[in-house]
Structure formats: C-alpha cells, structure tokens
Image (cartoon, rainbow, N blue to C red; front, side):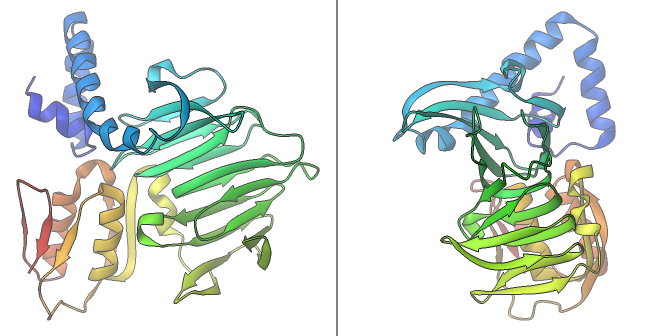
Length: 305
C-alpha cells in the first residue's frame, strides 16, 4: 500500500473509492493491519505535537489515547479517521479533552445520554463526572447537541464568545476561537445565551444568534444545508467565494491567502464531501467561480489569484 495514500486517508483527503481500497488492504492481512496501526501512531505523534504543547501547563496529564483506548465513560458511535482523548486533573477536578483533526468528525454520547457531534478542528472538554448542579462543557469549534432533558440540572456550553444554557434541546454551536466566530442555531426546545454571566437573549426553534461586528444578531434559519457537516458534507447556498474559503480554512486547518483585489463576486451553491479534500473542493469551485490558486508545498499555504 502506498504510504502517501495512507497519510492522505489520515488527513481525511481520500475519495470514497480510495477509502474502500485501504479498508480492503487492512482486512486482507494481519500484517497489513499492524502496519496500518504503526503508521497511525506515527501520524498521531506528529499531530499531537501542537496540542500537547498547550497542555504542558496543566497538572497530572495521565495519558493521550488513540480512540481505541477510550474508556466506557463515553460512547464513540462514529469515528472518521483519528481522534484524541486526554484525561487531566485541574483544580482537583478531572476533565476529558477531545480533539478532532482536520477534515474529520465524530459522534459522542455522554454519560447523561446527551448526543453530540463534533466537527473538524474542534476541541471539546468536559468533566469526567458532572456536578450536582450543572452539566458544564467547554467548546472551541463546532458541535451539534441533542441534550438529554433535565430541568433540575441545566446543560451549559461555554465558549470564548459566550455561553449557552439549556435543559433539553437540539442546537448547533459554531465558536472557533481562532476565527472569533459565534453562532448558535436552535432546532428544538429553547436556549438562553449569556456573556460573562449576563443573559443576552433567548432563542426559539428555527432561530439563530450570530455575533456580527460585536453585536448579537437574531435571525431565522432559512436553509439547513450548512448543518449537513454531521453527514460529512460541506454545503454552501448562494455563498460568496471569500465566505467559502473561510469555511474551508476551518474544516481543513489550512491558511488561504487571497492575492487578487478583483476577487469574483459570484456566489456558489453546492456540496462537497469532507473526505474529498480541499483541492477537490477548489477545483470544483473553479468551474463555477473563475479564479486560480497555487499551494506552497513547503508550508501547505494556499494562495488565491
């Protein structure tokens, strides 16, 4: 098996046919399976370099696990590629921290039966045991929650831009600290949005709250295609190129630079599979929105011309 193909699989950039090819190769021999795990560990070690650096200030880091070693405290119902779980002690409390690599996603079921999806480049932190008063979790990235109802024990999602308080509901949160984004979209039930302990607003089903120019803007959810990321799809509806490029940056953890002052103002409507990778998405976009791009092989940066 070509090692480059295996590593593209780890990065979430292989096609469906290539994934089938890799799966058949793994299942054909125990030696192939052992080799695959060996390469996976090497790849994980490279990915973990940046993540573990941010954890050095924490106390009592127990162990980073590959997904196969995750304890039964949570159920990983679906795994796409690699995912990492850390358990650490901070201020006498134990927390699990899950990091989802670029181009991948996972589905979790927490100990209170809350079901959630985590999108690419998302870090999710939660206590190994919820307190008696609240169920508080921490999010940097994007997640879709189906919260188990418990009015006596609210579920709180904390982000850099604001907190979401619920008792039982379905909603999506996009809050990447790197991009200073915050958007909460409600589908069922009700949520309250707080900032530094002050309640800002409450949402009704089919409403979303977005931070725009430091203001929280409430609007109706017109199109639900953008939430198809749970199915491994990146969807755009009448979206400008600069907004599309920003989304691709988030999902694939790449830096995209726009050099042209005359960037096409055309919009695009369509869907991509996360597993197809960013180059495939850009080539498809070129057919509808005329632009050129080059990738720096040394840095991985993409330049739009």
